[in-house]
Length: 60
Image (tube, rainbow, N blue to C red; front, side):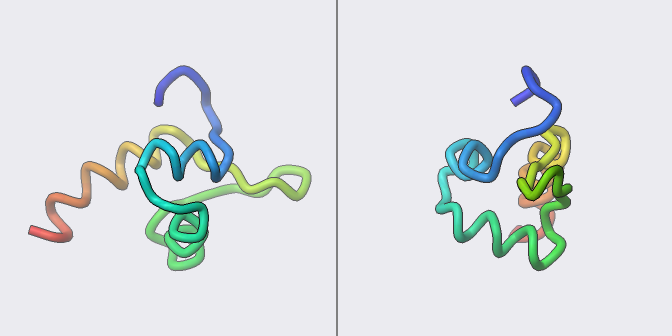
């Protein structure tokens, strides 16, 4: 997940093995930061990795 700076929602969903709807839910809740560029929602790769790393602490 480090080959690009920004990822589209479907790419993030694939990486996390969840649905696009779940990624949008995470974005809406603020659990996964995102930006909107020209009407397209994007997520930084480092934010996806930080989210995954935080799962151990959140759901331990």
